Length: 406
Ligand code: SF4
Image (cartoon, rainbow, N blue to C red):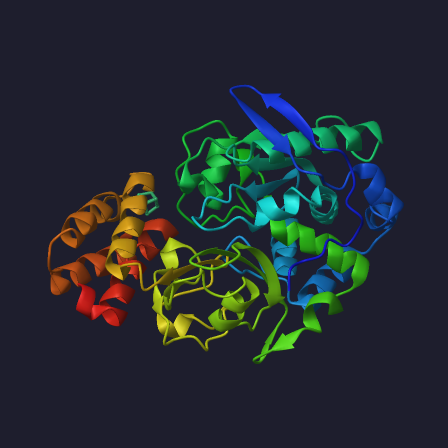
């Protein structure tokens, strides 16, 4: 099931001294190879007189949804941004800070131009003045690849110098939240904004801003070139499309697996070579720590947008972590809350204080379940952003599915 890159991957490996550390630059598709395979012809054709509505319709027909985790229909986003007068901006969310997620890195280290062409198509779609790429600094190789390939695009005259502005994230998880990312791009402390207004209306420097995840743009390029059927013709368990699952934990071969969107955890583990030797499947995190843990008995749910909601969780960025009989669900949940405690931006009390109190309560020999539930309700109802609203998920799901451990 492993994803095979669509075009030949060329080039020598280079070791670049990137300041304090050495970044090994993986062999990736260069501009020349990508163009030889027809790359950037779609962009050119669109720039020469393409119809934006038609492109949006194709994205909707393909069923493309935001792959950063929110799952909002991609084509519809363009209309919202276009509805507001220019100048407009485009921001790429490459923060990929959700623990267990590494799919964007996977694509950027192999086929950076599919992403870059997708980004330029989206920029054309909303007539963006500038494209900001907010890239997590923990990916030094990706940064080097992008610097190199953006320079190549400038040299080839595909974009003007400075049109693509590559920004470095500084390791704050909350800067993956789109409005906090925008604050950070503006040079301020990255804290989420209240909504409305939405970033499509009031985004970077108060201008209408289109925000897309890296992988979403990869698919924009592919849909525009290959047609909506590359996604909507794949059907499994009543679901359409493909998902890039980042699989880690107790599996034989951790990695990124491109599978039908209707895949269950059984399919995902099978794609990753089965369980690691000596480990029996016990539980799984379906989509980042905010999604909490589900037990192995719930092995037949398609891991897609919408399908996990009835079970009190969600697929998010499809960061699947597999736990075995060697692991404690209780310890995993505590670890998740410690992460949220550390990464809470501190702006609102239910999250800042709530995460800290939750960690204290979860360290007790026996969890005070009514008190924890009261805390969870406050956090869910009163937190400003998704971090505080979803942080209770690991607590609630652990109480529900692993009561003997708490
Ligand atoms: Fe910050 Fe947490 Fe409030 Fe979000 S919910 S704004 S991360 S304090």
